[in-house]
Length: 411
Image (cartoon, rainbow, N blue to C red; front, side, top):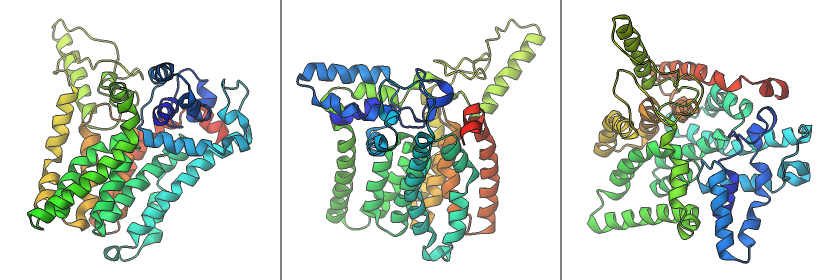
């Protein structure tokens, strides 16, 4: 129950927008003010009203992250009243935030990046990388994309990517069970990393469970499954108990939002939409009766449909099949020859496939493959070239996040 209440109140983390807040001042950090009151929902005497309260909170608040991120945000909110009581006050104060208010919020991002720092050092000191921790730290911690998203736009991607890199470190060292459990923890913190799950499944099944005999292999499969189930149970058991899984699923996977995000990700669907616009324009010039819709893809709005004029409509199932098709060479490779030294490359490729062909992809999802690729950029000149081109191109797509006066005036 507490998890349900906290997740409903968290609404997806400090970095997400809320329409009922003043856009210029409180958008990046509004959920903090909800966390102090969230546990009170779990202390109600009547179970039916208590569940109803949580139900209403989940409906009215746009919860877009799983429960573990709500737990993390709750921890960040515990010392907040000692810095500034308005951080956790209800209703939201109309007065501009104080310097201590803003400083505390910025420092929480810096504090959470300690996990990223530790994960990078662990990966960079592996023997086959010739011990280059300083260069790895420079490439990751000073990544323009990560700095702009986390420390200007204000989110916690560094902490989440730190979990991913920690999982990859365990896999590279042959500690498959720990790597799988950490990845399950990551999925319960941010579900968008789910696109890497097929690679993890193929690799762990072949590398951890197979080739050891039937009995030992089944034992390892049960052990890995028990670890993953334990993690997911800790995250989602309260929602199952109170019958809110359908609501949670609809919040975490809002397929009705349309093919493209308000700020487009530079992926395959940009060319698809552009081709549809060009064909519609040419057909109209040739005399065909083509109904030109409004600029629904460029209006900066999150719509409930993806209207195409000439080309076939794209559905979530279509994008899923394309992602899996594009990922299939990597899955075959991970299943046939599961080598730990290639796991970072395979996971980066999988997240790239999700970025290129996925449904409603955010431009910030480029961090999921550019940051891991920074670690293998030190392996060869060819890898360095690929990383440089990708990182520069993806950074250009993130510049749209720093367009408001709030960022230029306060940071």
